[in-house]
Image 1: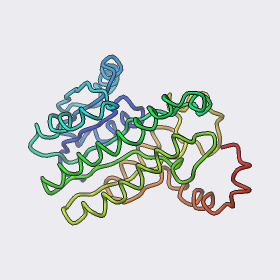
Image 2 (image 1 turned 30 degrees about the vertical axis):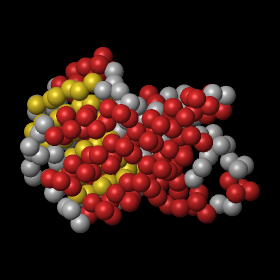
Image 3 (image 1 turned 90 degrees about the vertical axis):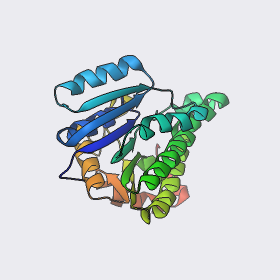
Length: 249
Protein backbone atom coordinates (compact mmCIF):
# COMPACT_ATOMS: atom_id res chain seq x y z
CA UNK A 1 0.00 0.00 0.00
CA UNK A 2 3.00 2.27 -0.07
CA UNK A 3 3.76 4.74 -2.80
CA UNK A 4 0.25 5.99 -3.50
CA UNK A 5 -2.50 8.05 -1.95
CA UNK A 6 -4.93 6.01 0.10
CA UNK A 7 -8.68 6.28 0.44
CA UNK A 8 -9.26 5.14 4.01
CA UNK A 9 -12.44 4.46 6.00
CA UNK A 10 -12.36 3.98 9.77
CA UNK A 11 -15.26 2.62 11.82
CA UNK A 12 -14.85 3.41 15.50
CA UNK A 13 -12.70 6.41 14.68
CA UNK A 14 -12.61 7.79 18.25
CA UNK A 15 -10.59 4.77 19.34
CA UNK A 16 -7.11 5.80 20.52
CA UNK A 17 -5.57 3.08 18.37
CA UNK A 18 -7.55 4.15 15.29
CA UNK A 19 -6.44 7.75 15.74
CA UNK A 20 -2.80 6.70 16.07
CA UNK A 21 -3.00 4.55 12.93
CA UNK A 22 -4.49 7.46 10.98
CA UNK A 23 -1.59 9.64 12.04
CA UNK A 24 0.84 6.96 10.84
CA UNK A 25 -0.88 6.97 7.43
CA UNK A 26 -1.33 10.73 7.32
CA UNK A 27 1.21 11.51 4.61
CA UNK A 28 -0.29 8.88 2.29
CA UNK A 29 -3.99 9.57 2.67
CA UNK A 30 -5.88 11.34 -0.09
CA UNK A 31 -9.18 11.01 1.73
CA UNK A 32 -10.28 9.83 5.16
CA UNK A 33 -13.78 8.92 6.26
CA UNK A 34 -14.24 8.67 10.02
CA UNK A 35 -17.28 6.91 11.45
CA UNK A 36 -18.09 7.21 15.15
CA UNK A 37 -21.04 7.40 17.53
CA UNK A 38 -20.14 10.46 19.59
CA UNK A 39 -19.98 13.68 17.60
CA UNK A 40 -18.10 15.62 20.27
CA UNK A 41 -15.43 12.93 20.64
CA UNK A 42 -15.11 12.67 16.87
CA UNK A 43 -14.69 16.43 16.53
CA UNK A 44 -12.01 16.35 19.23
CA UNK A 45 -10.19 13.51 17.45
CA UNK A 46 -10.31 15.37 14.13
CA UNK A 47 -8.99 18.51 15.83
CA UNK A 48 -6.08 16.57 17.34
CA UNK A 49 -5.26 15.05 13.96
CA UNK A 50 -5.73 18.32 12.11
CA UNK A 51 -2.16 19.51 12.48
CA UNK A 52 -0.86 16.28 10.91
CA UNK A 53 -3.48 15.38 8.31
CA UNK A 54 -3.91 17.55 5.22
CA UNK A 55 -6.15 15.17 3.28
CA UNK A 56 -9.90 15.48 2.84
CA UNK A 57 -11.67 14.34 6.03
CA UNK A 58 -15.29 13.27 6.07
CA UNK A 59 -17.19 12.67 9.30
CA UNK A 60 -20.11 10.26 9.71
CA UNK A 61 -22.05 9.92 12.96
CA UNK A 62 -23.53 6.46 13.48
CA UNK A 63 -24.24 4.09 16.36
CA UNK A 64 -22.66 0.84 15.22
CA UNK A 65 -24.67 -1.19 17.73
CA UNK A 66 -27.74 -0.66 15.51
CA UNK A 67 -27.33 -3.68 13.25
CA UNK A 68 -30.35 -2.79 11.12
CA UNK A 69 -28.54 0.36 10.01
CA UNK A 70 -25.37 -1.37 8.83
CA UNK A 71 -26.45 -2.01 5.24
CA UNK A 72 -27.43 1.60 4.45
CA UNK A 73 -24.45 2.88 6.46
CA UNK A 74 -21.92 0.86 4.48
CA UNK A 75 -23.62 1.76 1.21
CA UNK A 76 -23.43 5.45 2.13
CA UNK A 77 -19.87 5.41 3.43
CA UNK A 78 -18.18 3.06 0.97
CA UNK A 79 -20.45 3.36 -2.04
CA UNK A 80 -20.05 7.12 -2.26
CA UNK A 81 -16.35 6.92 -3.20
CA UNK A 82 -14.75 5.77 -6.43
CA UNK A 83 -12.41 3.41 -4.63
CA UNK A 84 -11.58 2.30 -1.12
CA UNK A 85 -8.05 1.17 -0.33
CA UNK A 86 -8.35 0.45 3.37
CA UNK A 87 -11.18 -0.14 5.81
CA UNK A 88 -10.24 -0.28 9.48
CA UNK A 89 -12.75 -1.67 11.98
CA UNK A 90 -11.74 -0.41 15.40
CA UNK A 91 -14.89 -0.02 17.46
CA UNK A 92 -15.54 -1.88 20.69
CA UNK A 93 -15.54 -1.61 24.48
CA UNK A 94 -13.91 -3.53 27.31
CA UNK A 95 -16.70 -4.12 29.85
CA UNK A 96 -16.34 -5.02 33.52
CA UNK A 97 -17.11 -8.74 33.74
CA UNK A 98 -18.34 -8.44 37.33
CA UNK A 99 -20.99 -6.00 36.16
CA UNK A 100 -21.96 -8.28 33.28
CA UNK A 101 -22.24 -11.26 35.61
CA UNK A 102 -25.04 -9.41 37.40
CA UNK A 103 -26.73 -8.02 34.29
CA UNK A 104 -27.59 -10.53 31.58
CA UNK A 105 -29.15 -7.96 29.25
CA UNK A 106 -26.05 -5.79 29.38
CA UNK A 107 -23.82 -8.82 28.81
CA UNK A 108 -25.70 -9.64 25.61
CA UNK A 109 -25.57 -5.98 24.56
CA UNK A 110 -21.80 -5.94 25.00
CA UNK A 111 -21.41 -9.18 23.04
CA UNK A 112 -23.51 -7.73 20.24
CA UNK A 113 -21.39 -4.57 20.08
CA UNK A 114 -18.02 -6.34 20.26
CA UNK A 115 -18.84 -9.39 18.13
CA UNK A 116 -22.03 -9.28 16.08
CA UNK A 117 -21.67 -5.64 15.04
CA UNK A 118 -18.03 -6.13 14.12
CA UNK A 119 -18.79 -9.28 12.13
CA UNK A 120 -21.68 -7.58 10.34
CA UNK A 121 -19.51 -4.65 9.26
CA UNK A 122 -16.64 -6.96 8.29
CA UNK A 123 -18.94 -8.96 6.04
CA UNK A 124 -20.53 -5.93 4.39
CA UNK A 125 -17.23 -4.10 3.88
CA UNK A 126 -15.55 -7.19 2.47
CA UNK A 127 -18.37 -7.64 -0.02
CA UNK A 128 -17.86 -4.06 -1.20
CA UNK A 129 -14.10 -4.56 -1.56
CA UNK A 130 -14.69 -7.82 -3.43
CA UNK A 131 -17.01 -6.05 -5.86
CA UNK A 132 -14.39 -3.39 -6.61
CA UNK A 133 -11.70 -6.08 -6.88
CA UNK A 134 -9.11 -4.64 -4.51
CA UNK A 135 -8.56 -3.21 -1.04
CA UNK A 136 -7.70 -4.24 2.49
CA UNK A 137 -9.95 -4.83 5.46
CA UNK A 138 -8.11 -4.53 8.79
CA UNK A 139 -10.03 -5.72 11.85
CA UNK A 140 -9.05 -4.94 15.42
CA UNK A 141 -9.51 -8.12 17.45
CA UNK A 142 -7.51 -9.03 20.58
CA UNK A 143 -5.25 -11.64 22.13
CA UNK A 144 -8.09 -12.03 24.64
CA UNK A 145 -9.87 -14.11 22.01
CA UNK A 146 -7.17 -16.78 22.05
CA UNK A 147 -8.74 -18.43 25.09
CA UNK A 148 -11.80 -17.93 27.29
CA UNK A 149 -11.07 -16.02 30.49
CA UNK A 150 -13.05 -15.83 33.72
CA UNK A 151 -12.30 -12.12 34.15
CA UNK A 152 -13.50 -11.23 30.65
CA UNK A 153 -15.88 -13.97 29.52
CA UNK A 154 -17.95 -11.83 27.19
CA UNK A 155 -15.05 -9.86 25.75
CA UNK A 156 -12.85 -12.90 25.07
CA UNK A 157 -15.74 -14.79 23.47
CA UNK A 158 -16.57 -11.79 21.28
CA UNK A 159 -12.98 -11.37 20.09
CA UNK A 160 -12.68 -15.09 19.41
CA UNK A 161 -15.79 -14.92 17.22
CA UNK A 162 -14.47 -11.89 15.35
CA UNK A 163 -11.07 -13.48 14.69
CA UNK A 164 -12.55 -16.75 13.48
CA UNK A 165 -15.09 -15.10 11.20
CA UNK A 166 -12.50 -12.81 9.65
CA UNK A 167 -10.08 -15.67 9.09
CA UNK A 168 -12.79 -17.27 6.97
CA UNK A 169 -13.42 -13.99 5.17
CA UNK A 170 -9.72 -13.78 4.34
CA UNK A 171 -9.80 -17.16 2.60
CA UNK A 172 -12.87 -16.18 0.60
CA UNK A 173 -11.69 -12.72 -0.35
CA UNK A 174 -8.15 -13.61 -1.37
CA UNK A 175 -9.13 -14.90 -4.80
CA UNK A 176 -10.94 -11.63 -5.46
CA UNK A 177 -7.92 -9.46 -4.81
CA UNK A 178 -8.92 -8.41 -1.30
CA UNK A 179 -6.79 -8.74 1.83
CA UNK A 180 -8.29 -9.27 5.28
CA UNK A 181 -5.88 -8.55 8.13
CA UNK A 182 -6.79 -9.67 11.65
CA UNK A 183 -5.01 -7.56 14.25
CA UNK A 184 -4.58 -9.04 17.72
CA UNK A 185 -3.23 -6.47 20.18
CA UNK A 186 -2.17 -7.33 23.68
CA UNK A 187 -2.74 -4.76 26.42
CA UNK A 188 -2.37 -1.28 24.94
CA UNK A 189 -2.29 1.73 27.24
CA UNK A 190 -5.45 3.58 26.21
CA UNK A 191 -8.47 5.08 27.99
CA UNK A 192 -10.19 1.70 27.53
CA UNK A 193 -7.58 -0.05 29.68
CA UNK A 194 -7.34 2.72 32.26
CA UNK A 195 -7.30 1.39 35.80
CA UNK A 196 -5.75 -1.96 34.92
CA UNK A 197 -2.60 -3.10 36.68
CA UNK A 198 0.34 -2.35 34.38
CA UNK A 199 2.81 -5.05 33.33
CA UNK A 200 6.08 -5.09 31.32
CA UNK A 201 4.10 -6.50 28.37
CA UNK A 202 1.89 -3.41 28.05
CA UNK A 203 2.49 -1.27 24.95
CA UNK A 204 1.87 2.33 24.03
CA UNK A 205 -0.60 3.40 21.38
CA UNK A 206 2.24 4.74 19.25
CA UNK A 207 4.07 1.41 19.29
CA UNK A 208 0.86 -0.43 18.46
CA UNK A 209 0.18 1.91 15.53
CA UNK A 210 3.62 1.23 14.05
CA UNK A 211 3.03 -2.52 14.23
CA UNK A 212 -0.47 -2.19 12.76
CA UNK A 213 0.75 -0.05 9.85
CA UNK A 214 3.44 -2.64 9.14
CA UNK A 215 0.96 -5.52 9.27
CA UNK A 216 -1.38 -3.75 6.87
CA UNK A 217 1.41 -2.79 4.47
CA UNK A 218 2.79 -6.34 4.46
CA UNK A 219 -0.74 -7.80 4.16
CA UNK A 220 -0.29 -10.07 7.13
CA UNK A 221 -3.18 -12.48 7.56
CA UNK A 222 -2.93 -12.46 11.35
CA UNK A 223 -0.75 -10.01 13.24
CA UNK A 224 -0.08 -9.97 16.97
CA UNK A 225 0.49 -6.45 18.26
CA UNK A 226 3.33 -6.24 19.25
CA UNK A 227 4.88 -9.38 17.75
CA UNK A 228 5.90 -10.97 21.06
CA UNK A 229 2.28 -11.78 21.89
CA UNK A 230 2.40 -14.59 19.31
CA UNK A 231 4.78 -16.81 21.34
CA UNK A 232 3.16 -15.68 24.60
CA UNK A 233 -0.29 -16.76 23.46
CA UNK A 234 1.08 -19.96 21.94
CA UNK A 235 2.25 -20.85 25.43
CA UNK A 236 -1.03 -19.76 27.02
CA UNK A 237 -3.03 -21.99 24.66
CA UNK A 238 -1.01 -25.04 25.74
CA UNK A 239 -1.62 -24.58 29.46
CA UNK A 240 -3.83 -27.32 30.95
CA UNK A 241 -7.15 -26.03 32.29
CA UNK A 242 -6.33 -26.94 35.89
CA UNK A 243 -3.42 -24.50 35.70
CA UNK A 244 -5.08 -21.89 33.49
CA UNK A 245 -8.02 -21.45 35.87
CA UNK A 246 -5.62 -20.47 38.64
CA UNK A 247 -4.41 -17.47 36.67
CA UNK A 248 -5.98 -14.11 37.63
CA UNK A 249 -7.47 -13.60 34.16
